[in-house]
Length: 82
Image (cartoon, rainbow, N blue to C red; front, side, top):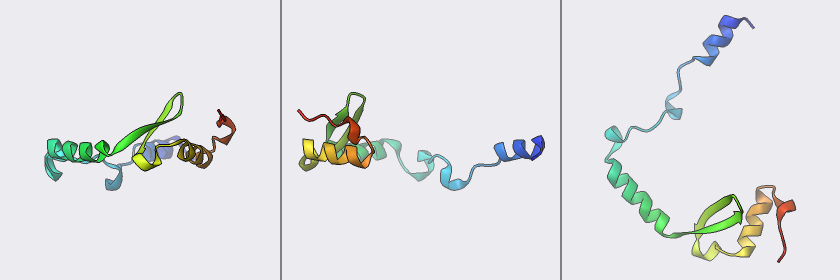
């Protein structure tokens, strides 16, 4: 592949589905932020390891779900039984 072809591929226009959403066109940014805060109010932090925290509903905020999530993420060798 020639250098010109590689540069054309690198600088190709971005497809519409990968572009950022413009909140000025699609709605009020403050209202969208408030709606997202309502969703987050129902979630609780669950610490997976020292650098990973996920937000889950209250019923999933337990050690069993933490282990299940770690297995799914391929982190089963790091599961510590206390």
